[in-house]
Amino acid sequence: MLNGIIASEGIAIGKAVIHVAQEISLPDYPVAPENVPSEFARFTQARSETIKQLDSLYNSVLAKLGEEEAEVFEGHMEIADDEALEEEVLELIESGICAPLAVHKVIENNVSTLLQLDGDYLRERAADFRDVGSRIIKIMLGLSTEGLSNLDDNSIVLANDLTPSDTAQLDLNKVLGFVTEIGGCTSHSAIMARSLEIPALVGCQNACSDIKHGDPLILDAINNRLIANPTPEQLDEAVAVQNQLKADKQALLQYKDTTTVTKDGRHFELCANIGTPKDAEAAVANGADGIGLYRTEFLFMDRSSMPSEQIQFDAYKTVAQTMNGKSVIIRTLDIGGDKELPYLELPKELNPFLGWRAIRMCLDRPEILQTQLRAILRASAFGKLRIMFPMVIAVSEVKQLKAHVENAKASLRAEHIAFDENIEIGIMIETPAAVMIADQLIEHLDFFSIGTNDLTQYILAVDRGNENIAHLYDSFSPSVLRAIKQVIDASHAAGKWTGMCGEFAGDAQAALILAGMGLDEFSMSAPSILKIKKELLKQDSSELAELSRQCLHAQDADEVRQIIAAFSA
Image (tube, rainbow, N blue to C red; front, side, top):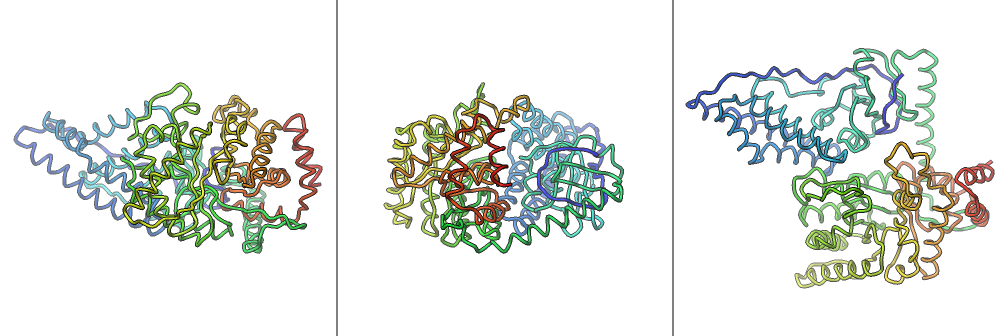
């Protein structure tokens, strides 16, 4: 039995397919000066074929998953077609090195640079360079580039790592799930697994060496277990859990079109958090009342340059139209902290979570902010969009941001481009500073949305990525709960509303406390919506209010959980 990191939840029962990257034996013959042109032509021909194959993969993924997931192959095409790559390869060929070896050296130099940088995202992008380089070299050597396109039924793929090309070629009629020995939840394979809705574990060390090709497997991405050669009892248990998951999911569908109202008539909005336009379809399928958080940073990732206004407009318009008149809250670019963009050349900081990130960067780079605001405003003509700014700590920042919105509106008016003149503006409440002055901030805004992921770590002074103190990170802490209550009360006193888009909103126990506090909108991953809706439908708001009052007076998170357990018993 092995453990890893759950990248995509679910249970798969099948047989192991050990995917070993094809061994490439690199030639090392000298290139005479008179043969440089023909050797370089060998590279350019292979590169052209690579771009052709990547374009085919792009269109295939576009049809299966949508624009956001397909964009990785646009990035791969840009790597293959990069002038710097061509110049470096030519320079090595002119020095007497053969084309396949030259490509290998250039790619590995880029990989070496990426691996030295801080942040999982940048290190994981090293796989993109290797994927492209491997494809060019294989074509030059006449090797197959098909990867995982032909597999048997009921396959569970095990690999040291899966490239985007590998994942894109998975036949979902035959592949039940996959496991990788390395990687994290931000790797392309993990993101695609969630989009494909197949179980996946990543970072599962020694999976390929401890498990044999063809071994019966249980991939349990609910309890974080990979079981080889399971016993009959383990198989029965896995099948039972699998059937229960299917039954639970089916049973919850009865609530899809039900309004979330407590027994005594208190109404709540249940919305979805999304990262791509394609995710909006899952929101609709799960009966979301709207999109409470569109994380636009994913639109900026997996690219070698900033997305244009048109690219952003197309994405925002797609979400607006998919939601068909329901509210869509678009958060402006939230880069920094644990999210980096190589082409922005963000400074290396001792504490990036407290550094030059989110609106701090955007206010210093107004051209980035203006492009995004224009795109959002243009898309607002096609649905009910709202603008939300992250990482606010002062009223002066809100005034600056609203001035930028007015500038974007003025530029569109001058061009006679339609947009929603009354588009609502809100901010994320994710800093203690914003909590303390919530009553002042709300005077200039239409709504709040509480981001508990960051708010919890800032209030408790706990780095949520530090495993040594992970036990201290707890949104059930009374200090966090009191901050949430203060924000909700401030908005209500001003006749405004507050939502929550942090992970806490999708927790069934937390939902009871939050509803009792008077939270107006809950936004979460789409599959959690129906579970929370079912829970709230059977409650009485006066009883929830008393529950939240007790929790706010608890001494620690453990006591809060005990109070909830007693309430739910």
